[in-house]
Structure formats: structure tokens, C-alpha cells
Amino acid sequence: MNNKDNDIWNLKGKILLSTMSISHAYLNKSMIYLCSHDEKGAMGVIVNKIIPEMNVFEIFKKLKINTEGLKNLNIHFGGIEEIDRCFILHSDDYMSPNSKIIGGHTALMINGDILKVISSVGGPREKLICMGCCVWEAEQLEDEVAASCWVPIDADDALIFGDPKADKWSKSLLKIGSNTNVFSDLQGNA
Image (cartoon, rainbow, N blue to C red; front, side):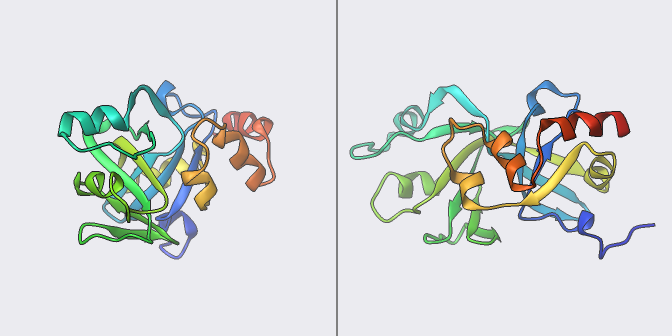
């Protein structure tokens, strides 16, 4: 039954758009960038939900990192798994030994080393800091995509790193030539 050549089995580096079929409130109008996807499961981070009461200055202050000359960066809610862990998506113009290319020009780092680099000159041009991640067990994501809970789309820098206060979810619908009515219709067909 598993057709491993089908795109549903190869979603690493894609963005998942939640549909109205998603029952978890925290996933409503979510965009998840998939960092890994294989036969063991999948992992990604939500890229369009800011944690309003948290910013990079607070994190750096706790870590005693100099913030002089640093512009504020929003902290994103990446998901309910590993909520105390920092997942940093960044452009590949900066790569550390702990960075892993995901897709296109986007890399992922899962430790705090990049926080020091972000605070200094020479770090990555684009960065997105997420607390927590989303995880799926083997074949769970494929089942959810087949049930129209998620619509996979191609990722691009604007959707991942673009204005965090913009409605990226609605803008991503334009990328696939759709509107929210289609997502309402999917709920009835799931």
C-alpha cells in the first residue's frame, strides 16, 4: 500500500498548511516547515506563530550574551513537543558544525550556539527562532495528509523568514491559488 515514490512520503523541506480539519486549537491556521520526514516519522516547526511575551533580548539576557547592536527577533511557538528546546531555522550563508541543510537554502540548528552567532556580526542573514517542535510517528503524517488535515506546499524564504506579523497562512493560500473556502470544503471531505 505504501508508494514511497508518491510525494506524500517525501515532504522534508515543504511547508504544511493546516486545514479546517485540524482539531487542535494551537494548530489553527498553522504553517509547519518540515525538517525531517522518513519511514520513522516526521518533525517540523511552526513558522507563523509568535510568542508575544517573549523576545530574543530576554533569552540573551538569561544567557548573559551581549545584545549591543542586536535588533529584536521574535520567538516563535514551534510546537508542543520539546517546548523548552530552541530550534533555529537559518539561511545557509552561515553554517556551523551543528547546522544541517534541510531544503533549498534553509538550515536547522537545535542548540544554543547560534544564539551567540546571531548576536555578533557575521551570523546568518535570515533566522527564525522557535521554541518547541511538532512530531509525527511513522505513517501518522501521511495519514493526516491523506485525510486532508494538511496541504503540503513548496517552501520559500518569504514564507519561512518573512514578516512575522503578516498573515503568512493566508498569503500561502495565494501561492497555491486558493482561498479559505477550499479549506472549509476539505473539512467536509475528510
